[in-house]
Length: 150
Image (cartoon, rainbow, N blue to C red; front, side):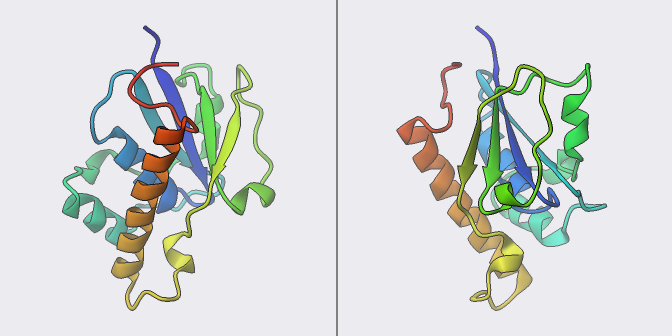
């Protein structure tokens, strides 16, 4: 059975995409694996993202912002599905990936876009909570692969 690889792609790879990668991989499902990257990645992981991952039982040591270009290299894992966060998909030109994987979008506000939050950490928590709901719904409706490889 082949592993299905998903790439969550965002601007800075420092909140939505990393949180989505971490949440999707939390169960260590061998049939589906998530990765994340950014068009313009931050230099380091936001400390609030780090804290929220830890609060949710995820060891954040392996999560760092990465450029999308690393997934275009010959040694990179094959990407079977690219997930963009709306409305970011209109702002950046998607690179040409080997095997031309399908692209889908998820609508989740980034933590910096959450004006209702009283603190940065609260905004990251709200972003993570919304991501969990959206990802679970996307898996349940077949938009994202679940526990069985495609």
